[in-house]
Amino acid sequence: MSETVPDPKRSLDFGILTGLIGYQLRRAQVAVFGHFADAFKDLDLTPGQLGALALIHGNPGLSQSALGGALGVDRSTVVPLIDRLETRALVVRAPSPKDRRSHALQLSPAGARLLAEAEARVRAHEAVIAARLSEPERRTLLELLARIGAG
Amino acid sequence: MSETVPDPKRSLDFGILTGLIGYQLRRAQVAVFGHFADAFKDLDLTPGQLGALALIHGNPGLSQSALGGALGVDRSTVVPLIDRLETRALVVRAPSPKDRRSHALQLSPAGARLLAEAEARVRAHEAVIAARLSEPERRTLLELLARIGAG
DNA sequence: GCACGCTTGTTGGCATATCCAACAATTGGC
DNA sequence: GCCAATTGTTGGATATGCCAACAAGCGTGC
Image 1 (cartoon, chains in turn blue, orange, red, cyan):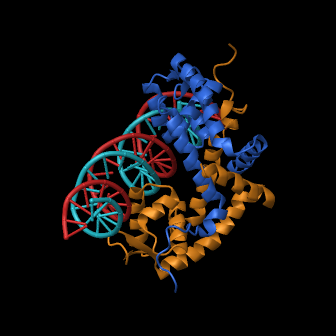
Image 2: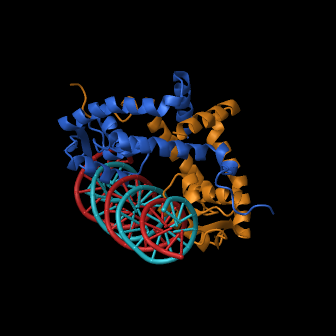
Image 3: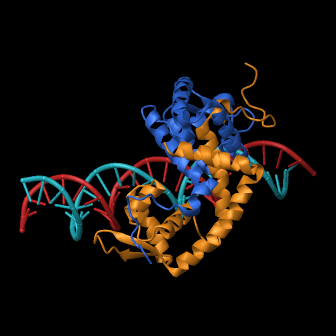
C-alpha cells in the first residue's frame, strides 16, 4: 500500500471511463451545452427550444405528439416546452383543421425572426465547438453520431 | 401555399438540425442513456454514479471537490450523489488525514464488488451501443468526442 | 502568532428536464 | 353508434444542475 491520498498534481486515473462512448458523449455534451448557453443567453434559447422552433418551421402544423416523437421526448415533456415558447409569443397553438384534439403548431412572425437569428448564430457556435476538428473529421463525427442515435 | 399540415407518412423536415453536432450529440446521448438505464436498472446505477465509483476506485482518498472537477459538475452537485452511494454503503466518507475540512472518498468492499460487476456489464452495454460501428470507427468516434469534450 | 483570504462540504433556492399514470375530449374503425 | 386508441394536459416523482451563502478549517504574509 503506497498512497491512499492521490497527488492532485498528477492527473487522475479515469479507469475504464476514457474508453466509454457513453462517458465521452457526456463530456462532449457538457462542453457543447455550456458553450451553447453562453452563446444564446441573450436570445434566451435552450437547445431544446431551438430544436422545437426548427422543427415547427420545417413542418408547420405539426402536432405536439409528433414534435415529441421527433425530439425523442415524451408528449408530456412537450407541454411546458411549448408553454414557454407560446408565452414568449414565438409559437402559436393553432386549432388543427382536421382534429379538434390536437394543436397545429406554427411559428409566429417573431418566432420566425428569432429562428433566423438563431440559425445564423448556431453556425458560429458550431464553428467554435468544432474548432479542433478538420472539416472531414466534423462530417465523420456527425455521421458516426447519427448511427449511434438511430439506435 | 400548398400544405400547412405536414403529411405524417412523409418524414419530417429537420432543417439545420441534422448537420449540428449539438443535435446529433443529444440524439446519441438519449439513445445511450436509455439503453444504459435498462442495462443497469437491476444494479440501480446511473452513468454519473458509475463514473463516481470508477474515479474513486482509481483515485482512493479523492475529495468531493476533486471528484466534481473530474466529473465536470459543481461541488454542490456531488453532495447528493455521494449521499446516495454512501446510503447504499458503496462509498465511505473517510476523514482526510491531511485536511479536516475534506472527505477522503473510498470504495467499500461492496462498492468495489459492484464496480467490478458494473465494469463487466458496461462492456456489453457499449458493444450494443457501438453495434453499428466498426472497431476503427468506434476508436475514431472516441477520439473525436474527446477533442470536443476537451473544450 | 495571527489576521485575512481561500477552500471544503453543506444547505437552500431555483430552474429544467424527464418519466409515468390518469383524465376528458375527440377520433376513427368496425 | 360503440369502443379502442390518440391528444393534450395535469400531477407526482426523480434527477440534475447551478448559484449564493455559510461555518469550519487551512495557509500565507507579515
